[in-house]
Image 1 (cartoon, rainbow, N blue to C red):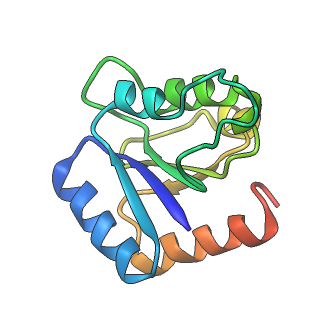
Image 2: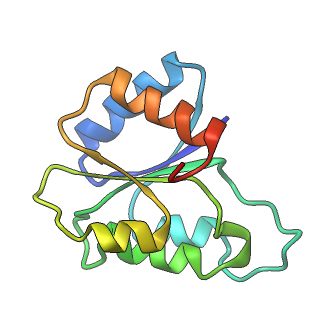
Length: 130
């Protein structure tokens, strides 16, 4: 399974990459929101393949875009409406209505390797929000 990772903290990005690879996942790192959105070729024909099977997106990114803004743009593309997405953050996040609206999962930092891998397995087996 291919996991996309949009995380602006290089140390966290590298740690997640190593953990996910150890679990058998192929990891595709996106340097920033622009690189992520460009990789998905938003609003291309439906037969255009998407680069990942699941996304992990940090809420607070170092540029002016938030993780939820990236997810909103991804969700506008019909190919990506059901893409499993996990939003992570160390900040206080209280807009859980937005999480429900975007049909994503939420993982608060710090989280354990088991919490992350269990959530990935759950949403790829049972679907998002089940």
